[in-house]
Amino acid sequence: MKSLIKFSFSRFSEIYDKEAALQKEAAKILIDFAQIENGKGLDLGCGTGFLYRFSNWQDLTGIDIALDMLKFYKKFNNNCIQADMEYLPFKENTFDFVVSNFSIHWADLKKTIKEVQRVLKLERYFIFNIPVQGSLEAVEQILGNTQFDFLCVPEILETLKNNNFGIEDFFVKNLEKEFPDGYHLLMHLHKTGVAINTKSQSLGEKRKIVQKFKSYQKPVNLNYKLLFVKAYTT
Image (cartoon, rainbow, N blue to C red; front, side, top):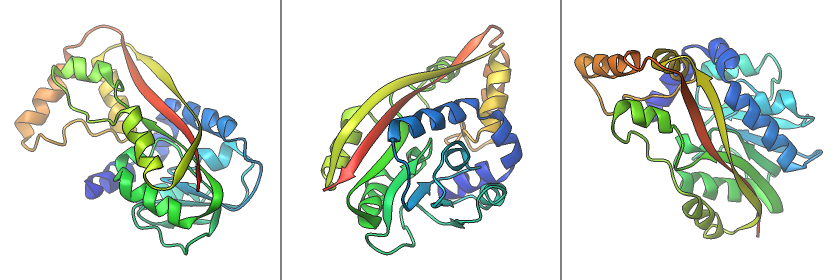
């Protein structure tokens, strides 16, 4: 999975940056939700830097597993390193806050939360969003079967509580973007790193998936049902 993530997000960071409208919208919502003015912060899965660029968080370290994303990120902030959020290369009690936008669903949630708890100072905040069940409904409709295994809200909140986090606030928001047809939706998914054929290895199977999208000749809404959480270490 991690090699797939590196490949998906290292091919076209500039295209991703232009195409990722919902990710940008989610970042702005997250920043407003966080209500954090300053401090030493960490951005998990920083991508092309939406959280850094849209906020006033000057002392923010970005980490990402995709090197090409970090090259783009450095146009705005040199304070970034290639790293895996499941194995953070930082000492305990290093950060005043940790944030993540549209990223932690790519990693093992339990491992990531344990690492965040380790590097955060006591009673400091972890603010993030994550797609949950009910996301990419149109994609599942076009494909005709369930392709995604997003977590449910109670499971995520329970995982936080089981790893010494308190929940200060959370809410769910559905973000949508309309496309003229299935093929335009498919192109957008490719440009934003969404892999829809991870279980399909043969060229023939991949062609069948593309044909399903091409055959969908009417407007379609891409949706992400996002859970926003503001948690703190206890």
